[in-house]
Image (cartoon, rainbow, N blue to C red):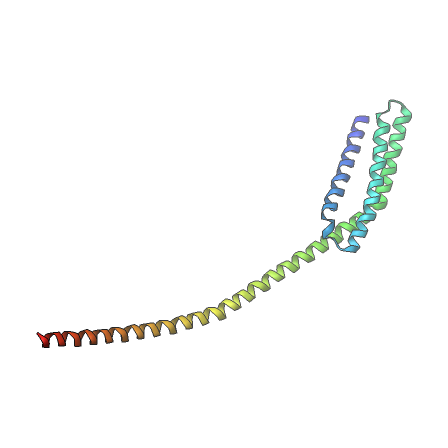
Length: 165
């Protein structure tokens, strides 16, 4: 029983450390109000962790009194947890809403950028096609005119050469 209780206490302490570390790593992304809420919750989590540590230390003792102290410390940690659990839930919900809002904003910005790109490509694309067709027509006309002039020149040259022979 002592061993099982100690394992649960240590597992709970590890989860508290993981939660604290994860939120601390993302705290720069939180609003000021949410950061304040997190700091208060973090202090309370630290108190819970400390009480669980005391319970674990007492369990290491061999006497019945030490076991009783461990149970009392664990119960006190549980009471503290119940007291702050609503704050932690509130923090989680607020953080989740804030993240969802930011994701929704990013999705909207992405959609608007795509629409602008589509509009730009449609307008610019039609303009490019028109300019290309105009340039192609000019080049074709210029090429035909150049070939005709060259043909006429070569014809005159050939005529002159035949006359001179």
